[in-house]
Length: 283
Image (cartoon, rainbow, N blue to C red; front, top):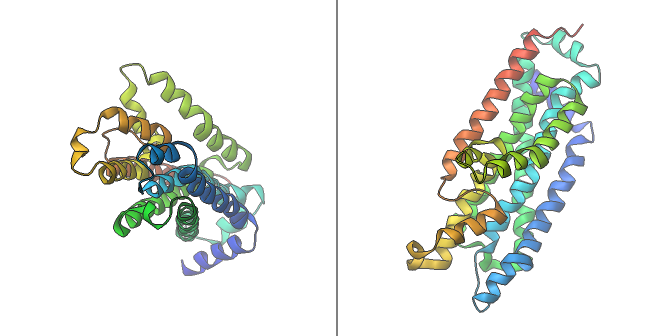
């Protein structure tokens, strides 16, 4: 198993894909952290409170995470689908017995790469937030740590889901188009269609919403608690929903529930990838 893991790291670091996808993670994280605290809704809120220091960095960290996790998913999906695209799947599976060990090695190796992505996201979103809101824009250190930690979890889970999905579809083109289409378009259409119906609650259980809620359902209540203080129980539901509409997540839905739901999706796709890769003929 150690040999397979080392082989996976060699594959990762001898290709350009891992750092090519890391570049937009870094750029978007910084822009979300800086732009979110310096401009837009957060700047309006700061002006309305007389220029008071607000923990806006907590919100923009969650915003950046929800923007860039798709790149971790693409990295994971192309990890396995790329074996079929580059015609290396046959050699890989013939030299590794059982086949499931290959997927296991990929999951371990890409979890480590996902952590690099997550750390880069947190670091550059924080740097952008420091430039936009200053050191007081992140609340207590424990709050920053919790939001950053949940961002790492989200990044890892998206990567694992991507690995499983790539193992199932085998085509790099299909993997990329389906992931981007679902995350950027399809789920939004589903959520919008159900928003004014009795099925509106279902949107919390969709993959994208669950992923967003891992970080945003933690950061939004933190932000409101810090701003409102003892008046927090008096804050209207409308205020929560407004912030969630901008930064992701949903009102009165715990972050840990979102984490469990999305972890369930990741587990299903990993299990599906394992089953399909074990049965597929690669000769």
